Image (cartoon, rainbow over all chains, first blue to last red; front, side, top):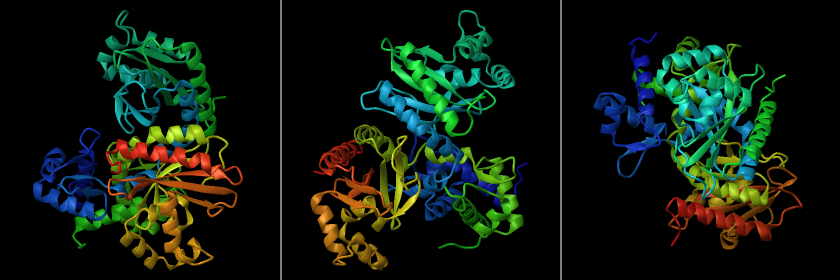
Length: 251
Length: 251
């Protein structure tokens, strides 16, 4: 569908520029940006100037550029992610005040787990999840619970595109479908040491009206301290609260 | 500095399109969007199509458009607001677990209070603050504390541009400068019923190395239940923690 009219290619370049920044690379020189975004250097200087005027980018005293506050404001004062996040926030806080470890909310997006929110506590265990960051589906409890509570065609197409997931998900029987059925049956996913060796990930689905996951709530627990029998019901109650708040409580 | 090259006008239109959405108007028809963004209808259709392809916008089944999840992801996985927010979050959570009311973080931006984060609790009092939303400086405790702990030239230029603030800030003596000095002196701002008639706003500055506010922490308390003597020290301790975390603790 893309074509090469100047307007179109400009939006494509604009998106590639934004896409060059991430949590590990929040600022860079214009030359680096031009290379990462695959934009000619002169064009990059011109675009950076104009984006800076609109505060979509901002220039640091060092000359490096980073994303601008205005971009954050425009993207956040109205967004689908924010609706879900606002609905979920009080429940996430309640969960965290009971569990006292990292508590996060994520959705399935383009075969990845996209983290919508993360509540951290000083002194909590290490946690790889970052807000607006992505994590692999089959390495995380949130991802597996999202997949397990997805429609069958979503599961099948994910497994077809990710043959490596099958071995990872169930190294004993290589039967990812059985494992997904098991998660659906018990209502939660729990993995030891898959993301970090000394933590356990635990996740439950936030179900929509059709009974499929619209999101997942996950907590990261120190290995050995997990007390699943007491924590799972807390997460499930919170998930039901979120479903109800967004008007999606399953019948 | 703006010129009329096609690339430039496209970015301007793009920003005006994003700027047409806010919390009160999260979705609209393309015709409404064209009118609000002041873009010709045919151009709006073309731009919406292209922005939708890149998931900067998304189309609802009704045909209305809203901001896309990809825009949220790009703007949030690396941003100055997010750095401050991530540093502040554990402290905001601790404050909220003690105070048990709305707890928020804001900065001064273009003569407005820009809300960076807001933690809400089920059953808290009403609160006008929205994440990425703006509030007037001289109607909020957060705004007044940000202004009071700003450099003198920032205060003076704000008061010069906002003569209405002077009467509002101190209806008895009309002496906004004296009131700002008072806030600086006591280290916090507290206003009854200025935003909502039955709430009190209370805010303290998060100070940077130069002794000026880099942010403010605010709580919204039910009128009559406020216990400032016990709450102010909790906010101040949290503010110092945030300063230290972002490497800005005043000497």
